[in-house]
Length: 445
Image 1 (cartoon, rainbow, N blue to C red):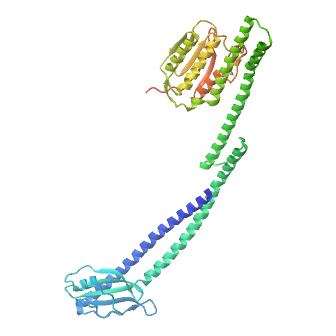
Image 2: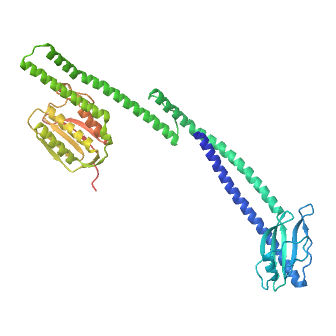
Image 3: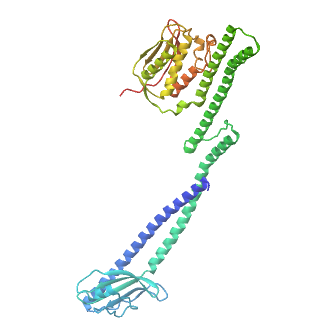
């Protein structure tokens, strides 16, 4: 069953349920009101008969009231003696039951009894009332034919109204479903086209501010994000291929030299050192590419982290690996971040500083109010290169002779932006660079 059909059926059923509920309430209320009117009429007739008995010590015949046609009578009446035997009825005997006999023999004034009876195939409402002190009882019955006629007509009108309401509900549901599913159909078609062709440039012209409209806008934004991601992947592959060619060419050249030439021990050592250097560069580049491609840090949950604690661990590890001093000056500012991603970003900043600072002085690391800054005394970054230093595979002219993949600082930018922060690269007073990132600080309680 399609969504459109489900909506139509649901609205039709809702309309039917509402109409039937209201109809049943109206029917029941009308029936109760009519029965109450008949009971009032019966009770009035019984009081008149009792008054006549008290006055004349007998019940005179009340002329039968006809009104049903075909000789049928509207009202019947009857006296029941103290022994429970019915007297002459008008126009015929009414049924006398156990309760009726008890009322006729009663010495007190019990409450009358009302009930529905069937006589000669006709339905009547009957009241039996005691005359008191063992004088017997009187019975009055009124035909329910008029009530049944009124209720039958009401029932037919309710059924007709229910049918019309169900039809109207179905038509309205069909129109509403058409308005909703028309846009969903376009979305479905676009999704199927994307699935079959792999194209991400499929635009869905969906308008409106309701859920369907918002879904269309979200679908278009999702396709745009996928298209950007695909472009980023293609650019990453192209850039990676370009960056891999240089060390691979060097490896092939050195391997060819080893294979074809007689080399002195010193020349052989130099070629092997070059091969080792190129292999390490290839390893670093592949590791960086895997990190960017898999982006496993996104699976790590966020937590409140004191930046100084991460910075201290990074500085200690860098000192152990490089035998250089990393001077840390940190406050207790706290951020909401992924621990491993944050540690990777700080490590990349420190590794970048160690690579370009050839002196023996310390690398400085400053953490203040959510800002992490790594300062070195390297050659610095030209002002024209500062806006590109965080781009993938970008390497300034002065840095192209240095080893590296050109991906370390781009990872720093990705980590900072994913946590709502930003990166910066400035010149350090007295020479060198000041590179780092800023993150939103968790307010102190």
